[in-house]
Structure formats: structure tokens, C-alpha cells
Amino acid sequence: MKEHQRLSGLDDLDEDWYLAQSAGDRGARRGRGWTGQRGFAAAMMVMIGAFTVIEGLAGLLADGFYLVAPEAVLAFDLTGWGWVHTIVGVLVAGTGLALPSGAVWARAGTVVLLVLNAAAQLAFLAVSPLWSLIVIVLCVVVIWAVLVHDDEADG
Image (cartoon, rainbow, N blue to C red):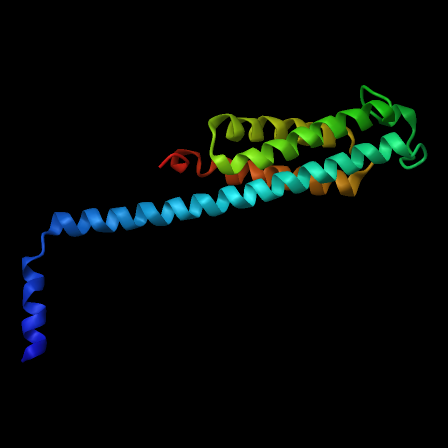
């Protein structure tokens, strides 16, 4: 009988209040999800940047590290690509460090830099196919992680 007395007040609950609370809980869960996605994207950006810097420095510091016919490399020689990879890698890692702030420029910069990095890796595919493919896939995953929750970033 006492259990029924405790449950008797449930009929008096305001349905709008309950729906608002449920929506708030969903919003909080979404916010935590975006924070997790943002953290993942930031960590991956730093890692992709480090991979790209290593790839660039390998081309700059070790002359015989990449062996390829000169006509297989697009636009630049291997030293030029070493500089491109090093500079892009530093920018990617730096943007990855700023991504957890949620700043619009960091999110936009992430997408732009990763598209540029993926394009550079695509041009470098003849030189280092497996490494380039891995970095391209990582770029696509991080772009997805940033863009899929872009509407929830500020809320």
C-alpha cells in the first residue's frame, strides 16, 4: 500500500517538464559526444602532423631515403616535397593543439589543412605508397570527426 502512495504523485507530473528534461539530457549527452570527438580529432591531428613532419624530415635529412624515378614525383623534387611535408605537418599539429578550444578557426583550419595534407600525400603516393595511404585515411577520418558534429560544437 505504501508503494502506491509513492507512485500516486507520478500522475501529476507535468509532461512538458519531463520532455524538456529529457531533451536537456540528450543535449548533454551530445555535448559529451562532441567533446570526445573533438579530443579524438585533436589527438589524431597531432599524430598526423608528427607523421607528416617525420616524412618531410626524412626527405630533407637523408638524401637516399626515398628512391624513385624523378618523373614519378609531381611538381617538385624530393627536397621540395620534404619542405612541403614538414611545413604542413607543423601546421597540422599546431591546429590539432588548438582544436580542443572549439574555435571556429581551428575547426575550419583542421578541414583545410587536412585536405591539403591528403592532396600532398596523394601526389607523394608514387614515392611512399603505404605511408601516404595511411595518412590519407587518417585525414579523412579526422575530417569526418570534425564535420559530423560541427552543428553541436557551440552547444
